Length: 283
Image (cartoon, rainbow, N blue to C red; front, side, top):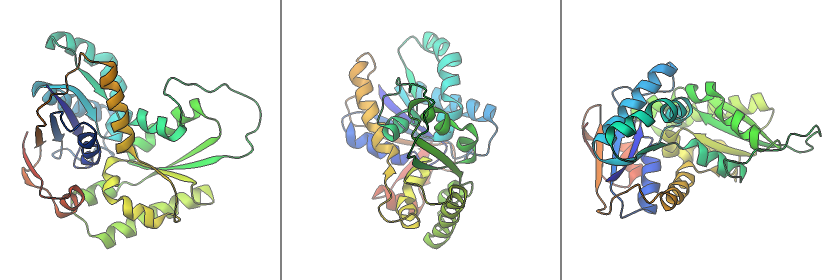
């Protein structure tokens, strides 16, 4: 058995690395759907179908749990798959499996509250708001998942999402640092203009963006706290396996990297982030 990690491209490697560091003995299979990336601008039904196909591929390869290391898939497809597809697929497969996302642990980290918590609605005016900026794909921004779910839990956090549609294609294409910095600065300025000031904290609501987190830090005011999705996801997955011993993450420390796109070495930007050569096999 193993842990499957799924993303539309290479952004999920940021989550994958955190999971490997937290669970070094586990076996991992990473699947990048690069043939269909990016997901952010696709219709919701396409995102659901592509995500389901990726999960099936990973379960067929022996995964007991698939982590959707993609905010767009987590926001648009996860609940649908868990409610309408997974029960029947689990029965047909004849073994326990599950699909998890990365938005729940991110919201828990942003609010400091468990997912089950719901705030008591009050009529009192909130005197001071904590302004949270979320940089994400167009699909995640359109879903308003961060605004909706954070508002259920804490009324003193105001969420402003900024779509960054150019960044995933640029990262996948190995864009240069100067071009990436110009794009990020434009998105940060656009968010600042909408809010009227810089956010108090930020969420990189697309796992691709973690690869260029240093560029976001440079574009935001010095010291702006950033919610780290990979660390939050690793914390949540470790607790999940403690609660679900029936799910086997494997013990051989295996590492497999698959892509629906062109197999072979990844681009220089990704390999620099990863810290060494990284070669994908054909899915």
